Amino acid sequence: MNAQRFTEQNLRRLGLLCALGTLLVVSAIPSNADASEDERRTDSSGKPTIVLVHGAFADASGWADVIKRLQRQGYTAYAFSNPLRSIAGDAEYLRYFLSTLTGPIVLVGHSYGGAVITNAATGNPNVKALVYIASYALAEGETISQANALGGGHSELGEHLILRPFPGGGTTDADGYIDPAFFHELFAGDLREKDAAVAAASQRPAAASIFVTPSGPPAWQAIPSWYLVARDDKVIPPEAQRVMARRAGAHTFEIRSSHVAMVSHPAAVTELIVEAAGCR
Image (cartoon, one colour):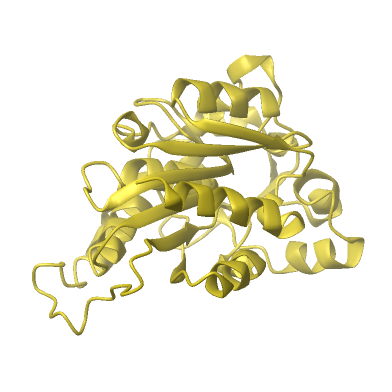
């Protein structure tokens, strides 16, 4: 299977990816009940722990400036390494990570990371707030591909993806990368060109099947949420972001930003997280 441009037609052909491989990996992680107090991380400051979840075509380093600001304000923050393999498997992996923490938690998701926190936080009483940064607050049964069409917007992502095979993907799945020639314009339009070029070269691929996998029961039905709309986003249409924020009942704010608001506007993103963290 050669690398090929990823179109909406390719998306429709993809079947659901079994999350078994990821679940086998996380099954070795001890549950919160099995961990000792020393093994479980807790924040003695009384402030909630902030867990930041990156999306596709990126990694945890995108939260660096936000983490610095949170730490200066006395917060414990973790940038979770999202496997980017399947919604169900990635959410299960995050659930196990959350089980090692004690005390209140604020979950923050960017892009596809929003789909992961939407599923991982369901039923977790320690998660006190969800924060969506230009991300997917999916409804039950909804796919990312469907969410991109909400509000009549158009995502340019499907027009500029390249597929590469990965072990175990067979003929029904592949790793999706943004074509580096379009990365700056599509993903990070308000970053310097040389910084966007580095991000394009170091992007982490996501299994293409995540775009057509239905989401589970959403945590935002029971947990208060905040949403930052990126008005200049070409990955998730701003129109779709507004629809997802509205139906989740989220406290919604908008800024003029590309898709990577946490990189180009870390102060605004941090401010929103701190606001969510302060609401008990």
